[in-house]
Image 1 (cartoon, helix red, strand yellow):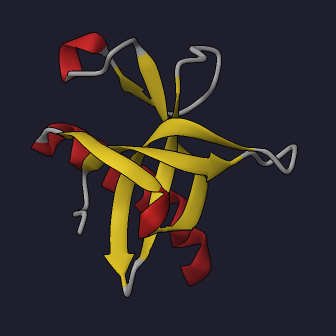
Image 2 (cartoon, rainbow, N blue to C red):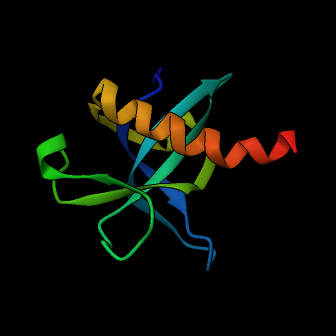
Length: 104
């Protein structure tokens, strides 16, 4: 079982193709074997939350709060690390900002 804020190595789908590739992702929540994750990319040109080597990333990366997927727990290979409380708050704030449109 994985918990919110875990950085995992998982097989995630790509939006622009039918391919599934092994990539890092941040666990947002898990329920009944389904895990909602936010993708992580090393493409520094992407928008999102910086996730740097100083945060524990293997390479400077971006957490993409606009790149969310629900995957079965079986598609997660392993837990890599946990986000710091500060980085978890940044993810929460970014997601809250996007979801606040539901209230309007």
